[in-house]
Length: 334
Image (cartoon, rainbow, N blue to C red):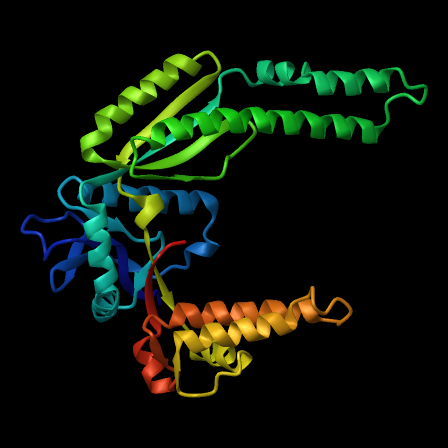
């Protein structure tokens, strides 16, 4: 039988809205509310791509509809709570951080800008005429041994290097120009070789028209070489999306033993010092001939990250009963 829980779309900075939210509803703690719907609990990491895409579309449609009337902090796709009590626990644990995000996100939206080559084949032809590539080709053609497969691969690498430099030049110029108007920006991965720029800009509502004008100027300047696509205004997905993490006592206990921290109460300063001491001792550069030293160093580093994430206060408890009260973390997605 399918397990039903609450799917969380995001957090709004208000008590339950007086107007209905359609098929979703609000669960509140103090002056913030989670926008949720009753849903079968599903592990999104194992969904087929087309099914995942449908869920993502619904997730974003709900958030962007709520955004028209409320400031909303998006929740990561696929975030479920077991019941309304766990939703309230999430709001309680994350309250201080969530309120701080609302201060920063007031009258702020995200605008995503993508630029692609207008004519990728022409760009490749142009790159192949670069002096360094032409010289290398001529040297190969004049060689008595002819052009080997390795030589062709080297030409391909050279072309890619030149193309990357050209792309980076355009991307930096566009990014620098638009970031002067924005509150911040975050570059995303490029999907293919034809993409030049894929960047999210955090924008004040008051400067959206300035941003549009600047984008028009860039389009006029690079119009023959680049095609621009702009999506927004959007909720600040790239900057303030929340993530829920449920910790396991076994992982925390392993981590503190790995760093030889055996007391029930440990400070963040003690965690940092223990890690620095062990990282120095196990660093591969200091032990070049010791078998398995890289693995030991990696485990020490992993243990430090686990403990640092768990310890939200200056002093944290490693008593199992206390851990249960702090096993749920609310954080901004990295």
